[in-house]
Image (cartoon, rainbow, N blue to C red; front, side, top):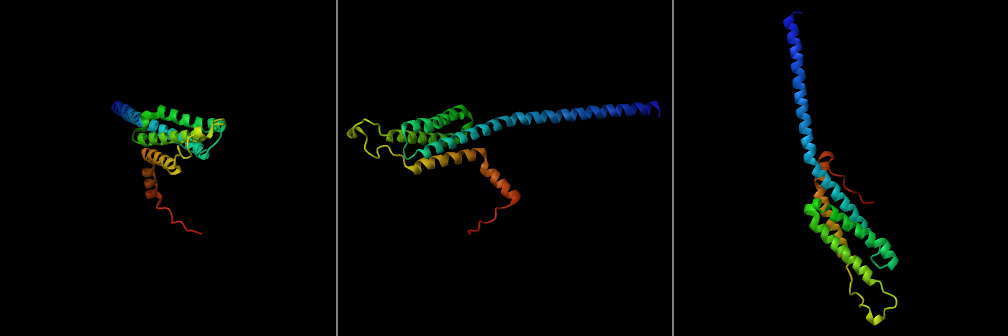
Length: 181
Protein backbone atom coordinates (compact mmCIF):
# COMPACT_ATOMS: atom_id res chain seq x y z
CA UNK A 1 0.00 0.00 0.00
CA UNK A 2 1.42 3.34 -0.97
CA UNK A 3 1.60 6.47 1.11
CA UNK A 4 -1.22 8.03 -0.92
CA UNK A 5 -3.48 5.05 -0.26
CA UNK A 6 -2.66 5.23 3.45
CA UNK A 7 -3.40 8.98 3.52
CA UNK A 8 -6.73 8.42 1.76
CA UNK A 9 -7.63 5.62 4.19
CA UNK A 10 -6.75 7.74 7.24
CA UNK A 11 -8.49 10.80 5.77
CA UNK A 12 -11.61 8.76 4.94
CA UNK A 13 -11.70 7.30 8.45
CA UNK A 14 -11.32 10.73 10.03
CA UNK A 15 -13.93 12.23 7.72
CA UNK A 16 -16.32 9.37 8.58
CA UNK A 17 -15.76 9.92 12.31
CA UNK A 18 -16.39 13.68 11.98
CA UNK A 19 -19.58 13.14 9.95
CA UNK A 20 -20.82 10.49 12.40
CA UNK A 21 -20.10 12.82 15.35
CA UNK A 22 -21.89 15.71 13.62
CA UNK A 23 -25.04 13.70 12.92
CA UNK A 24 -25.02 12.15 16.40
CA UNK A 25 -24.74 15.63 17.91
CA UNK A 26 -27.65 16.87 15.76
CA UNK A 27 -29.79 13.90 16.80
CA UNK A 28 -28.96 14.51 20.46
CA UNK A 29 -29.80 18.24 20.15
CA UNK A 30 -33.07 17.46 18.42
CA UNK A 31 -33.97 14.92 21.10
CA UNK A 32 -33.21 17.44 23.87
CA UNK A 33 -35.35 20.11 22.19
CA UNK A 34 -38.20 17.60 21.94
CA UNK A 35 -37.84 16.66 25.62
CA UNK A 36 -37.85 20.32 26.63
CA UNK A 37 -40.91 21.06 24.50
CA UNK A 38 -42.79 18.04 25.90
CA UNK A 39 -41.98 18.73 29.55
CA UNK A 40 -44.89 21.18 30.08
CA UNK A 41 -47.28 18.57 28.64
CA UNK A 42 -46.04 16.00 31.14
CA UNK A 43 -46.38 18.49 34.00
CA UNK A 44 -49.93 19.25 32.88
CA UNK A 45 -50.78 15.55 32.70
CA UNK A 46 -49.42 14.98 36.22
CA UNK A 47 -51.35 18.00 37.56
CA UNK A 48 -54.62 16.86 35.99
CA UNK A 49 -54.19 13.36 37.38
CA UNK A 50 -53.46 14.76 40.84
CA UNK A 51 -56.61 16.90 40.73
CA UNK A 52 -58.60 13.90 39.49
CA UNK A 53 -57.47 11.74 42.43
CA UNK A 54 -58.31 14.49 44.94
CA UNK A 55 -61.71 14.94 43.25
CA UNK A 56 -62.49 11.22 43.53
CA UNK A 57 -61.45 11.10 47.20
CA UNK A 58 -63.56 14.14 48.04
CA UNK A 59 -66.59 12.85 46.12
CA UNK A 60 -66.57 9.53 47.96
CA UNK A 61 -66.05 11.17 51.35
CA UNK A 62 -69.08 13.37 50.74
CA UNK A 63 -71.12 10.53 49.22
CA UNK A 64 -70.55 8.28 52.24
CA UNK A 65 -71.81 11.04 54.54
CA UNK A 66 -74.49 12.48 52.25
CA UNK A 67 -77.40 11.37 54.44
CA UNK A 68 -75.97 12.98 57.53
CA UNK A 69 -73.36 12.18 60.13
CA UNK A 70 -72.07 13.22 63.51
CA UNK A 71 -69.89 16.27 64.09
CA UNK A 72 -66.88 14.09 64.91
CA UNK A 73 -67.25 11.93 61.79
CA UNK A 74 -67.85 15.02 59.66
CA UNK A 75 -64.62 16.66 60.82
CA UNK A 76 -62.72 13.38 60.48
CA UNK A 77 -64.12 12.08 57.16
CA UNK A 78 -65.38 15.05 55.14
CA UNK A 79 -63.25 18.06 55.97
CA UNK A 80 -59.76 16.65 55.13
CA UNK A 81 -60.64 15.42 51.59
CA UNK A 82 -62.43 18.70 50.82
CA UNK A 83 -59.45 20.73 52.04
CA UNK A 84 -57.09 18.47 50.08
CA UNK A 85 -59.13 19.03 46.91
CA UNK A 86 -59.06 22.80 47.42
CA UNK A 87 -55.29 22.80 47.99
CA UNK A 88 -54.64 20.49 45.02
CA UNK A 89 -56.70 22.68 42.69
CA UNK A 90 -54.97 25.85 43.91
CA UNK A 91 -51.52 24.28 43.57
CA UNK A 92 -52.17 23.00 40.03
CA UNK A 93 -54.43 25.76 38.74
CA UNK A 94 -51.95 26.96 36.13
CA UNK A 95 -52.15 23.56 34.37
CA UNK A 96 -55.93 23.05 34.46
CA UNK A 97 -56.73 25.35 31.51
CA UNK A 98 -59.82 24.14 29.65
CA UNK A 99 -60.96 21.85 32.48
CA UNK A 100 -60.75 24.56 35.14
CA UNK A 101 -64.31 26.00 34.95
CA UNK A 102 -65.92 22.57 35.30
CA UNK A 103 -63.53 21.52 38.07
CA UNK A 104 -64.26 24.73 39.99
CA UNK A 105 -68.01 24.21 39.46
CA UNK A 106 -67.68 20.75 41.01
CA UNK A 107 -65.65 22.21 43.89
CA UNK A 108 -68.43 24.74 44.49
CA UNK A 109 -71.06 21.99 44.51
CA UNK A 110 -68.87 19.90 46.85
CA UNK A 111 -68.54 22.85 49.24
CA UNK A 112 -72.29 23.40 49.14
CA UNK A 113 -72.86 19.70 49.82
CA UNK A 114 -70.44 19.74 52.76
CA UNK A 115 -72.16 22.85 54.10
CA UNK A 116 -75.57 21.18 53.73
CA UNK A 117 -74.34 18.07 55.55
CA UNK A 118 -72.95 20.22 58.35
CA UNK A 119 -76.05 22.41 58.43
CA UNK A 120 -78.26 19.34 58.64
CA UNK A 121 -76.61 18.19 61.85
CA UNK A 122 -78.93 19.18 64.63
CA UNK A 123 -77.12 20.85 67.47
CA UNK A 124 -78.14 19.47 70.82
CA UNK A 125 -79.59 22.05 73.12
CA UNK A 126 -81.00 24.23 70.31
CA UNK A 127 -84.78 24.62 70.67
CA UNK A 128 -86.83 23.14 67.82
CA UNK A 129 -88.30 26.53 66.87
CA UNK A 130 -84.77 27.97 66.48
CA UNK A 131 -83.72 25.30 64.01
CA UNK A 132 -84.12 25.78 60.26
CA UNK A 133 -87.08 24.03 58.68
CA UNK A 134 -86.47 20.60 57.13
CA UNK A 135 -85.28 20.83 53.54
CA UNK A 136 -83.97 24.38 54.00
CA UNK A 137 -80.43 23.49 52.93
CA UNK A 138 -80.85 20.37 50.81
CA UNK A 139 -78.52 19.58 47.93
CA UNK A 140 -80.09 17.20 45.43
CA UNK A 141 -77.98 14.06 44.99
CA UNK A 142 -78.29 14.30 41.22
CA UNK A 143 -76.78 17.83 41.16
CA UNK A 144 -73.91 16.68 43.36
CA UNK A 145 -73.27 13.57 41.26
CA UNK A 146 -73.58 15.41 37.92
CA UNK A 147 -71.06 18.07 38.97
CA UNK A 148 -68.60 15.28 39.78
CA UNK A 149 -69.22 13.49 36.48
CA UNK A 150 -68.84 16.73 34.52
CA UNK A 151 -65.51 17.54 36.21
CA UNK A 152 -64.22 14.01 35.56
CA UNK A 153 -65.25 14.30 31.92
CA UNK A 154 -63.47 17.67 31.64
CA UNK A 155 -60.27 16.15 33.05
CA UNK A 156 -60.56 13.18 30.68
CA UNK A 157 -60.97 15.55 27.72
CA UNK A 158 -57.97 17.62 28.84
CA UNK A 159 -55.89 14.44 29.16
CA UNK A 160 -57.01 13.27 25.73
CA UNK A 161 -58.51 10.02 27.01
CA UNK A 162 -61.09 9.84 24.22
CA UNK A 163 -58.34 10.32 21.63
CA UNK A 164 -56.37 7.46 23.19
CA UNK A 165 -59.48 5.25 23.21
CA UNK A 166 -60.09 5.95 19.52
CA UNK A 167 -56.45 5.20 18.74
CA UNK A 168 -56.65 1.89 20.58
CA UNK A 169 -59.87 1.00 18.77
CA UNK A 170 -58.11 1.64 15.46
CA UNK A 171 -55.21 -0.58 16.50
CA UNK A 172 -57.09 -3.49 18.01
CA UNK A 173 -60.58 -3.02 16.60
CA UNK A 174 -63.93 -2.45 18.22
CA UNK A 175 -64.67 -4.36 21.40
CA UNK A 176 -66.93 -7.37 20.85
CA UNK A 177 -70.62 -6.79 21.56
CA UNK A 178 -71.68 -7.69 25.08
CA UNK A 179 -73.86 -10.74 25.38
CA UNK A 180 -76.39 -10.57 28.17
CA UNK A 181 -76.69 -13.81 30.08
